[in-house]
Image 1: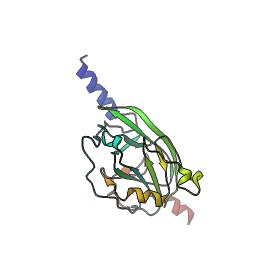
Image 2: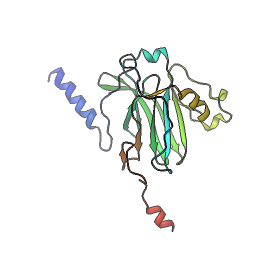
Image 3: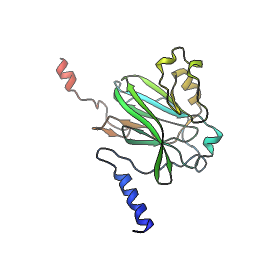
Image 4: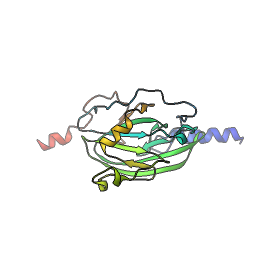
Length: 204
C-alpha cells in the first residue's frame, strides 16, 4: 500500500472514530497562519436556564502567535473547537459530569493530550476556564477560596471577575457549542427546553 493510501486510511479512521465518538481532523490554524478576527467578548445567555455556560479563553502571548496549529478541545470524546492565542469560545451543557480535555495536532492527526480535567457541572451557573501553557496563574493570588477552583496542566478555572477582565479584549474565533451529552448534541441554534419532561412529571 502506498504512503498516500495509508494516510487516507488513517484519516478515514480518525474521521469515523469509535462508536459514539466523533473525532474529525484538526481544522484550526494557529494565529501565525490566521489571526483571530471575530467580535470581542460578549457574555451569552443559555438556551435553557437550567443549563450551565462554560467559557474557555486563551490570553494572547508571543508564543501563541507563533503557533501554526491551534489545540483542539473535546468533551466526552466529542470534538468541539480549536482555540487560537487571543481567542475565546464556550460550551453550553446540562448539569452533570464531563471529561474535558485538549489535544495538540500535527498535520491531520492529534498526537498529544495537553490536559485532562473531569468536570462536575451545576446547572444554571457560569464557569470560566483559562488556557495557557506559558503563563499559568497562582490561583491563591486571585481567589479568596482557591480550593473551589479546578486546576489542571495548562488549564485553570478562575473567578468570574478575573476572567471578565482578561476576556474583554479577546475575540471569538469559532462559534460555541451546545452539548447535551451522548444523546443530544447540536449547534447553538438548538430549540429551547431540551431537557426531558419525564422527571418533572414524576415529581408532580
